[in-house]
Amino acid sequence: MTTRVLTAHVPLDLAEKVDELAARLERPRGWIVKQALSAWIDQEEERHRLTLEALADTEAGRVVGHEAMRRWADSLGTGRPLPVPAADTGRRTTRR
Image (cartoon, rainbow, N blue to C red; front, side):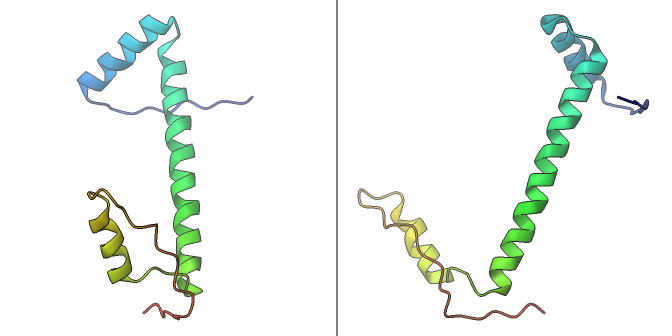
C-alpha cells in the first residue's frame, strides 16, 4: 500500500492520550492515529449515507408527523409506551 505522511497539530492532552494508548497496546503512535482516523472517516461516510437516505425519504413523503412523534416520545416515560409511529406516506413534502 502506498502511503503519505499527514501532519496535524493536536492539543497536548490528546497527544498524551495517543502516547498512553500506544504504550498500553504496544503499537506505534502512527498505528493508533491511523486506526482513529479510519474509524472517524467510516463514521462520517455512514452519517452522509444516512443523511442522503433521510432526504430521499422526505422527498418521497415518507415522514412521521410532529404530533405522532410527540405522542410517542411522551409515552416513553410511562409504563405503557406507544409503538413507534409509522411514516405517513400520504403526505407529500416539498423542500424549499
